[in-house]
Amino acid sequence: MAIPTQHHIVILGSGFAGLRTAIELKKRASRLKQARITLVDARADHVYTPLLYEVCTGSLMPGICADDLRVRELKKGVTFPLSDFCFSGKKISVEVKQGKVLRADPTTHTVNFEDGSSLSYDTLVVALGSQIATNKIPGVIDFALPMKRLEYAVVLQHTFREGLKRARRDGKSWRLVVCGAGATGCELAAELAGYIRSVSRHKHEDAPKVDIVLVDASQRVLSASRESVSRRAFARLSSLGIEMVLNACVKEVRKGEVHIDVNGNKRTLTCDAIVWTAGIEPSTELAHLGCPFDERGFIRVKPTLEVEQTEQVYALGDAVIFLHPKTGARVPALAQVADRQANIVAENITRSLERRPDINWNPPERWTTVIPLGGSFALLDLGLFIIGGRAGYCVHKVIDLWYVLSILPVRRAWKHWSYARKMFLQNDD
Image 1 (cartoon, rainbow, N blue to C red):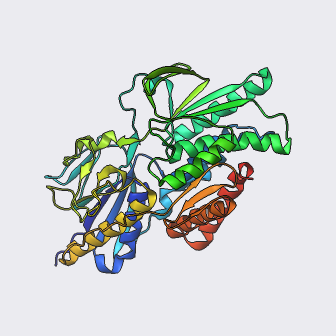
Image 2 (image 1 turned 30 degrees about the vertical axis):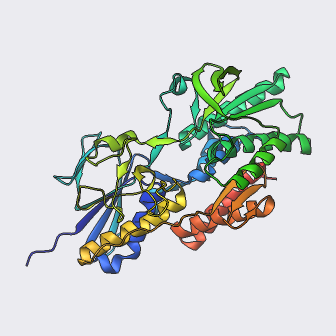
Image 3 (image 1 turned 90 degrees about the vertical axis):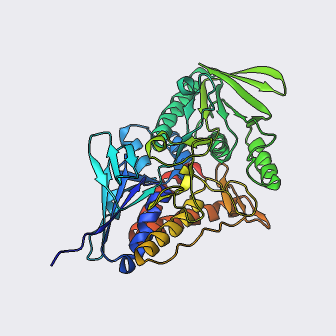
């Protein structure tokens, strides 16, 4: 008697969307029956990106040496080895393949990798995320430091440490320009400014002189948030001594210079370091997956999150363009969005094997967001009202704990969260 072959589900990407899809499929093991999952990523670990801004400042405190050991400790606070999510079972198994995707062919159901290897699949899930958008502005790639991945955060940490050391030694001001006043830019600027204020307040030593400039083309910071949230964020950033230059379009980036246009007036901002946090664009890996795209290069999907013009290919997270059925606006690129989409994808894959009709994703019109803004301060937008300050910060930490609990067993989750909290608490006071 022939042994039935296992249905092979290949997930490209181990970020919020990809990892959550694997976890949701594992929960449906009794329904999937004979199936196996391969989780593919160029990295060997899952990165909790909401804490990358903490990595940038996590070893700047006086008396702490940012050597290789310290950097490894910082990385450990925001990473989870993918091997922790592998398991074998009678009904479903999860394996991890480390490799960079070269191309995929939906007609032959094959994924090829840069190292020459390949994988065949029965169902493909694309969750390759996004990358920093340069908007084709000259000099961004060469002279600005992007803030998107763990490797970039480590480079920024080294840049900040050396800059602050030089400012202390020479008694001169060290100037940082952050291009992009969205959540990432505001979090990073506030965290560094909060650290400087902490040094001064607690008198660990003389605080280095640092000027932080936040630049954005919009009329307000956190332009994707409600205006009331933006106003409170502006007040918080101002209290930290951060200069905000709004309605400013970046025209060119040079070494130590950011050339901007503010309402038709050209200005040049001189600085010692430039950080780029101005939006996202599709990952370059998406271009070779045989999927239909919109004009910006994001994958087009059906309401079921199955890729248009394909069968048994799903896409989710930052890689896709999903328009809200009521408002027509694009659903934001948030971790919680990826989590909810993953549940839909896992359910529809399971239903496909059960020969049941798919379900559509109906996203909410508003999303609860929390934005940490230096020290023990955060803004929690609940829609009807806003919680700010230490209360918002406490909720922020609870959200971090909830996420870790959702992907790891309780004891390991608590241990990891406690380690990360202790590691990054030094800058949160």
